[in-house]
Picture 1 (tube, rainbow, N blue to C red):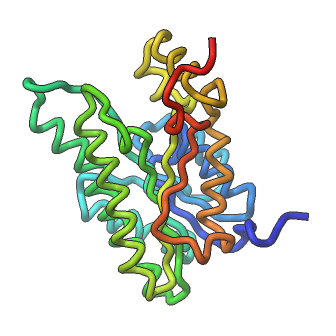
Picture 2 (tube, rainbow, N blue to C red):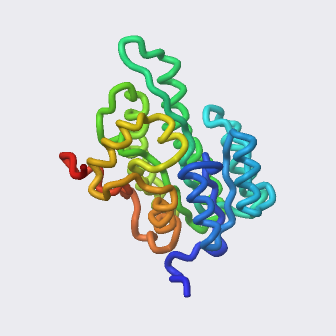
Length: 257
């Protein structure tokens, strides 16, 4: 028998960037635990595939993270199609490298805009829907272990994800009177198309050797923490970060051959 503390039956979740990788894993994990789920995504083939997997009419909603009107419409569309909104997962946003001194300002604006400004605007409009319904809710921001390090060539990504940590804490305090908990997942290195495509075999092996777990994570291994933060099990948890990284961030040396 499923533990009612972690049961998501009757809840409605909107997961940005939910058509692949970690977002898809969370979307399917929420659905398996009873939630109705809508996702956003840009790739038509991935959108069609995840819509079939979710089995929900209108499961994929168009949204541009750099356009507030588009975000507002996406949140309203989720509420209209599914009847309410209980959980927002701010997961969307790509990553690409650029180094000083030739770092293009437009690259900074685009990436920080998507990850940080986009997360803020999604939370703004999702919280408005939750407050209007008067039943509280959950906002789960997704940061990265790069929020805790100084990765070369990724200053914009590190700054944006560090900003997500601060945003989480501020919104947790601000939205607490409305019964909305705001928390942050901090994933480490997971075997997603994006992460594997952006790392060399040598870099992937170096990460494996430093991780106490001795391997990369699978996307499904983020689901448990996400379900916890989306469920009533976390009703007294807000403003915190949950690091899911196989111990990578606590290791100060190579541990494996």
